[in-house]
Length: 414
Image (tube, rainbow, N blue to C red; front, side, top):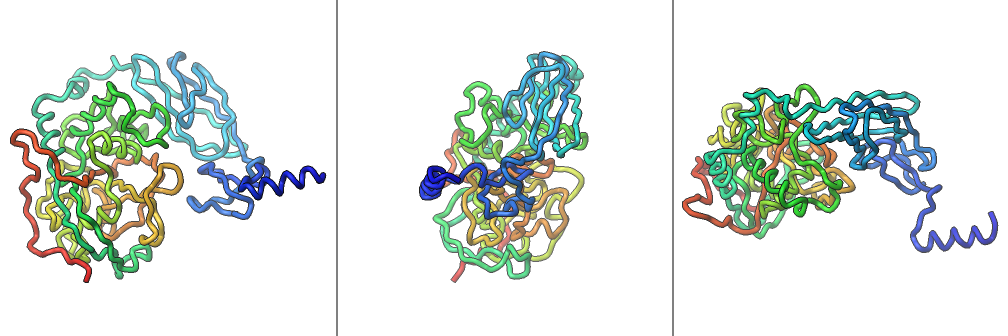
């Protein structure tokens, strides 16, 4: 190495600049790290030299031919046939064309293994008449339901609460004292009727409420191409029939964040979520320490919000165990005391609460071992919002819907 190169290298290191050939890259999440790191802290994959990142050839057959194809949020061309050289790992495909429903697909590229994908968009006119009727604009009754639920919030009082569990998993320990100035939380999970108003509005006003790290022009429609998820997908931009008062699912973290900002609220931190679920009283479940399937939805599918009033927390918050698990604004750390706000790029946001597909262990208040990519969509995950101020009432809309509440008081930390 010449003297000039040595001087440039010393200067670059002094300025905190790491040369490209000194970087390593995760083949799965594509994040880069300096040469001293061998394994990705987010998914455990063995890192590779950035200049040696493996690739694979992907052939995409597109119908109709005029459909535009984007990979990981970046336009890559139109049909009828595309050939792309993509880095190994997980990718997201989106295809769109006027008069057709959008097509989305997640796929994996493996080094040295050619991949062939068929993308066929469904014409909007092909939706059966009965299904199209179910996707018509929400009637006045559904609008009234959505507005009523928007204002249905419970207050968690200011104080210092004891969170965590000494009986749970390693990441639930130790017990910790957490202070809050108080906040208001949605009594119910956000429903399809509420989310429909959000979608209708952002189609007019754009993406002003979206997270800065969200991919450009992201589609917030709940949708998944997997066969088991199609019955929950919003064909034509409308929720499935008879699910208006069920919690919205197939929404990723960016969808939940955007809705909360649009509604003038925010996502709860995991500590706030736990306070609202158990009142800081060290309970295993919102209603006590004994699990009961009569007090929460652990069945075959999500049900209407508030269907299990006997499972209310001390604050009167419903469905904090079962029905759907819920996104929070906190990035996962093995020690909850190290938790930081999720910024949209690095780490994984925590999902709390268990779902209709969980058993008793996953529905415990302190369970915090579920954390996923912010792009994760599932039929078992939804969300609710919080606010730092009381909801503003209009007309005769109640701030808090009447719900049965256990008589035990929340335990504050001494």
